[in-house]
Image (cartoon, rainbow, N blue to C red; front, side, top):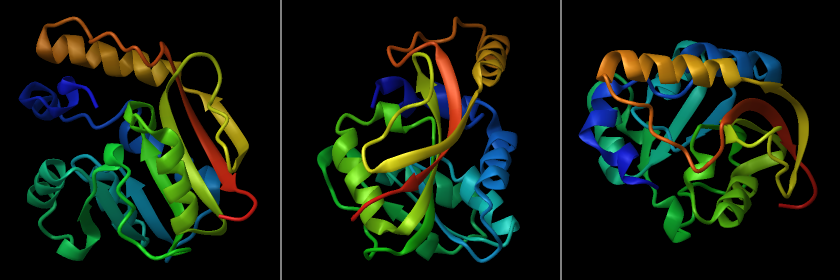
Length: 197
């Protein structure tokens, strides 16, 4: 991951991801997930989506780097400590959950930051139930990612959410929005795990 996302400036900005809560709610609505669903928030950041999932009656677990998890725990003190797990995704570390534990995984604007996406996706497949869902929003070039081991059920062009995010960054920080080597487009999509995990 780049230094920007570890910087104090980024953490003070604290807008989460392009589209924010509305994007997360859209992905959930399009997925058809119901109350009681068990969801992994991969690269959960400061934990806002985990908190939202709890308010919607879902069982949520957030994973991220230890320093980021500490911020999430401080921000959302009311959420049980068992909901937060340190995880070093770029080192090939396995996710700290049993096989087929989750109904869905959520990853918002983070998958493209991980260096070894293939290993991370294999781990996501491992912890998802058979035909479990992967809800994703991210920066890209063109249309939504095709992911090995997943069938893309639908996707939406979300470039306007990225533009709004960049405008807010400029307004609040007075600085040019950081260039992304990940692409200039943005999407949200619902995927389903296919084949053996």
